[in-house]
Amino acid sequence: MKKEYRIKKNEEFQQIFKRGKSFANRQLVIYYVKKPGQLHFRVGLSVGKKIGNAVTRNRIKRYLRTSFQELEDEVKHEYDYVVIARQPAKVMNGKEIKKSLVHLIHKEQLFKK
Image (cartoon, rainbow, N blue to C red; front, side, top):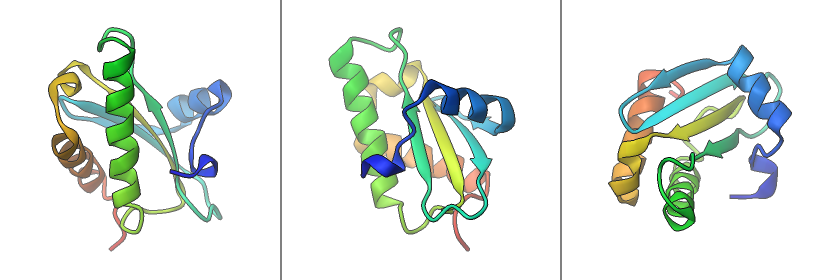
């Protein structure tokens, strides 16, 4: 995923948490806020230390980034997203994480029609 598509700054995370809407399933929580005029969506990922060691956390983030890359053409572009991994995500593989992410995005109608 290109760097301009990532959210890195703490202020941006906090703004999305305050102004955005959230939705969750057992594995993931997604916050999203609409940014009119934005050409491409941006994604911030958060995997807490309670999930596991650095290897586990980085693997989950890699799976999430890959999932967003694969869904790039289908997800609405005028949004910023923050995805937070929950405890069950640490035993999931890439396909399962993508399925969970697709479920959340579909539920919140964030796919292009």
